[in-house]
Length: 265
Image (cartoon, rainbow, N blue to C red):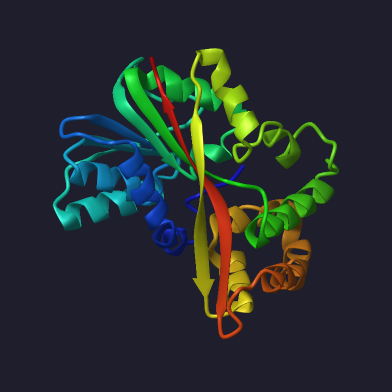
């Protein structure tokens, strides 16, 4: 299980800010709309929604990130609510929100069928759900695959196991057919449009070292892998990132994401 309060997610959150802007724009938020940001992290989407006049609520399991979001809101004079909670059991009554958003947040919840059921449950009739998800290709996806394989090997799960990363991806948030399957039981047909999202750093080595030291996705794995296995990931991680580098003078990789909108009847 990923503890998103570990390390320092703030730099990654800053790099994901453009995707939050795209999600808020796609949600067509009006003043007075009730908006929920699931897996809000440091508050990117919730803060933008509030700036559009929404009554915004950010939800995240990581208490530390909620404090960061709360501080950002206070510094900007923005009124928003911050709630600690789980995407699989949202602490809100049915039909609470006009728009429910998640920027690369709910995609880490498993099982995904339950996560989607919760998104639909708390969204009001004629409301909309807007998500951003990653498509499983490119250097960043390969880096995640490297980590997942190491965890599977360390837990004797293997590629065909039933507990762990493989089962969490039984339905792929980045696959349009899988997305339709996730929403189909609720009579909802999502629309998904691909968009590019670039990550930059001084070098592949600098990004690898940053992730291993600070990124919650990686830091959370250290307890499972142990120090020796974890340290052994550094060189193959650098190699994977360097193989996808688009900037010979520094480091840039572009990943494909999906902007997903599902309108409720």
